[in-house]
Amino acid sequence: LRKSGVGNIFVKNLDRNIDNKALYDTFSLFGNILSCKVATDASGKSRGYGFVHYETDEAAKQAIERVNNMQIGDKQVEVCAFKKRGDRETATVFTNLYSKNLPDDFDDEKLVGMFGGYGTITSSCILEDKAGRKFCFVNFEAPESAAKAVEELNGKDLRTEEQKSEQKEDDKPEAYLLYVGRAQSKAERAREFREKTANAEQSSARAAGVNLYVKNLDESTTDASLRELFEPFGTVASCIAMKDDKEKCK
Image 1 (tube, rainbow, N blue to C red):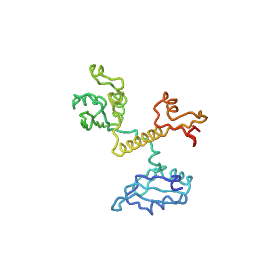
Image 2: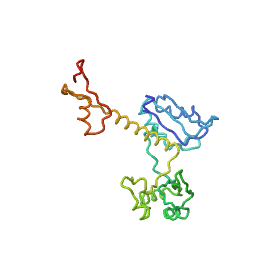
Image 3: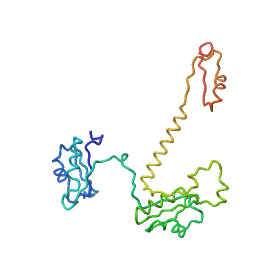
Image 4: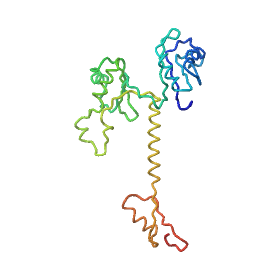
């Protein structure tokens, strides 16, 4: 039950004076509590939020309905169902943007010219990676400005006519089209990298493990003739015609 997350609620905006006992006393009215904890820092001071895990989902729902927006101590608390990290929705409200595939001559003046029309920019910076390719971060005052910039700028082709003429057939659009999106935290980038790596490894493993079993072969079949039979369909990594003690194909 504890691992399933059923009956688990999240309480935030807690008065810093509320401790485990006060939290328990408040929420025990609605059902049997399996665990109850106020999050604290290294010195034992409240971080302003906590968790209550009920034995039943019904008790949790009643607690959310009755306590959400209620004043406990000097603060009005928010109570909602706790969601595991993987079940939480990706943040949709943001002000900080990341942009790449910028022109070689991109500078502060061009940054303001590109992004300034969408709203007030509170901070920005232009950087280069090890290959000398420019990228930038732009932080807007309002989330609406950031969202509008992503909507209108992401995917634009900022290349010169000369650069377009030099495009190769195997060039992927994501390698040259302007990218503008929500700036991710270091933890988000690390998690995304791990997921991509894991997916690539799984695909590689599946590709490496494609085996066929062929039966009812002629007894004269050899490794070479079997390979020759299947090579027109793709690269054959290994091929064996099983033989009996008389060296005839089984």
